[in-house]
Image 1: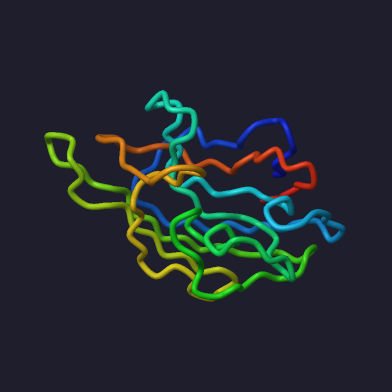
Image 2: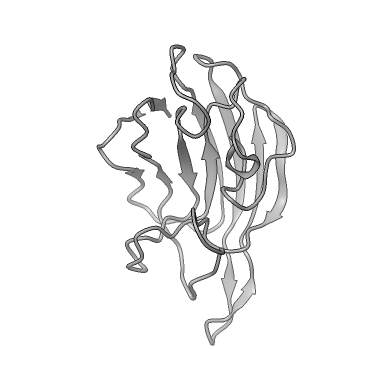
Length: 171
C-alpha cells in the first residue's frame, strides 16, 4: 500500500492496545527535498484523534529519509517524534526497503483517569535497536509539551499522510 499525498492517513479499522508490529517501508530512489520535506510520514501507534475529538492526538514513530539528509535530532527516522531521538541512524539509501519492528505497550490509567503507567515503546530499525523501552511522555505534539489525555482505551494504528510534496512512502 502507498500513502499518496493528499488522500489522508491509512488507518486500521480494528483498535489496538499492546502489540508487536512489523512494518516495511521505503522512500523512492529519486526522492527530492531536504530535512523534513523528504518522505516525511509516521507510524501512529495509537491514533486517538477521532475518539478524543482532538485534531492531532497520537504517539508517533517518525518515518523520514535520513540517509545523508540531516534534520532535527528528534524528528529523524526511528525517533519518537519530538520526544526522543533514535540511538543510531539505521537508514538505508532511498529505493531500499527499511524495516521497523515495534513493541508497544499502551498507557494505563487509574479509575479516576490519572496516569498510572505511561506508554512504552521499543523500536528496531533494520534489525538495530533504536528505541529501548522508551517511556512516552504523552502525545507526540509538533508544538507544545506532550501530555496524556485520559483515560483512553484501544485505538487504531495509522500511517501518516503528511502532505509533503515529495512524499511517496510505501508500506
